[in-house]
Length: 145
Image 1 (tube, rainbow, N blue to C red):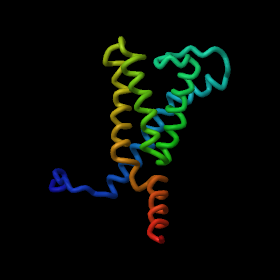
Image 2 (cartoon, helix red, strand yellow):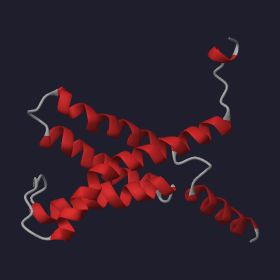
Image 3 (cartoon, rainbow, N blue to C red):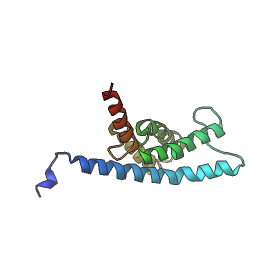
Image 4 (tube, rainbow, N blue to C red):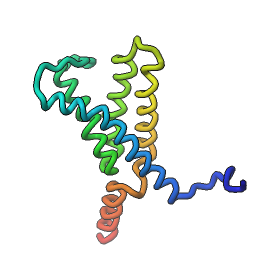
């Protein structure tokens, strides 16, 4: 019972939680991005929203970049904070443009994604990530000067 209300951070648990969160959210987003990538590689006409006036195909490619490449980066914990930004933008477009008139039920899923990506942007990927290993290696290099 004492541990239930303990607010002291257990760093190992936090880092494991961040690992599970990163892997889970990346895999979930890949289920949205992978079919888009296959559609792009399959050829044919692309019909997609054009929220920034770039054209349907470039907008589709940007969505694929976020949903596939940035998800893989988050999965690995590589450039995690940078990878979260395109995903946040993509999900905000889904909420406020693609599903603007659909109501909260259709906006809820991208809103959950935005919350997780904002959390990762603020907190980072945790100890079990490539970012952590790169950071440690770089800090050792600077200490040797």
